[in-house]
Image 1 (tube, rainbow, N blue to C red):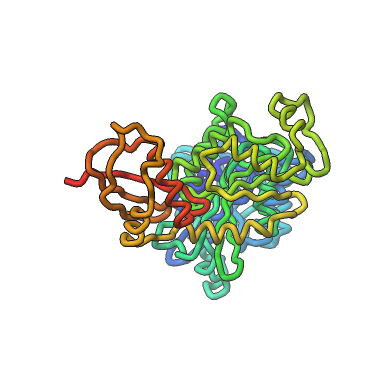
Image 2 (cartoon, rainbow, N blue to C red):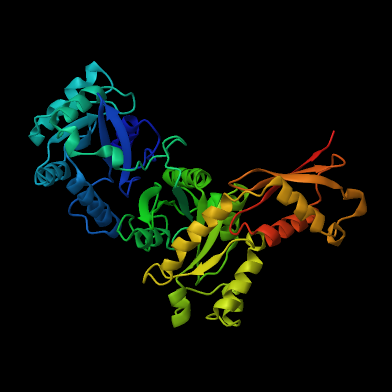
Length: 455
């Protein structure tokens, strides 16, 4: 139909994934816009099929009903190049029951020659009908003029206090807001975790892998601290993504991860760490995001329930090593994710809510560590105490560190000034990072180290 294309046009960004495949949008997407001095809150919903009994269409309908209840006006988008069908008539009857001003946007009317396409849609019985082209931004101004004309007075809807879910600029973001991306491969419980953290049914949850496509935002305030949680689409291997919508959702998941402060890496306890999990963790580590490892479905491990299907070799090995022992499980997981040794780990069940209360204090602590700054004098006193002879580095690749300073935070970045211009040996860098963590902490966040030769 073009609902998401119209949504992106109005909010002025590519907030929603757009493609030729039907049914791409599933969850509600929010964005802010301004028209003729009026601030608007725009909601994009999935395609509504009222009588559909299948799980995902039924959940899309439930999400759309929430949006209808929140709205002050409704725009129904129809495809001008398709014939009017019985589901369209049924949808109009449903929308009338919402008792909101109703507008029909007949999309894909790309020129005046095609204006006759709207004639058939007068059968819907809606007076406010506008031919538009969301793709070419044609006719949208007339539609918005009509919508703004019927909205309540500005005092009745204080949009300014509603946080935007689109990617805001640094100036617009509250400095106290912590952006948290929920990442992992499909069907590990990311959307269930979002719903549990926000105490809502914000995201559609189903046992079907790949249910989430657009990134879903929700803001939570707890103990005076604002958290913006972003539920991203499950990241798959390149060879496993076939539909264009899936490919785009993976790209957008990477984009939202890079815009976040902290990543909640969700691991399915019944599956353990796979090669794909390690790759996703690598994305967070290499992009400089702080990371908390969330082991979900731990209740199934304690109850002894097994994943359906033939167990993998890795699962058979795990079963012989005390599967319900949390310490033993954490030891094996850390062995498989050695490069995330700095990341704290929490065991939860998003289904029952057990262990969720541990996540918020961890988020605050990791966010503080991410922005921690050490003075140059403190770093130089630290250097005096370090015995660099303990670092297992070949003599020809050793350098003398003259002094060291912290150049930036988020992530903490340190600059070494050395006696010669050579790339630091990885063992030397790892030794130095371990010494910095032992002295100053920096829990949950990667540390970047750069070196320069003193001229």
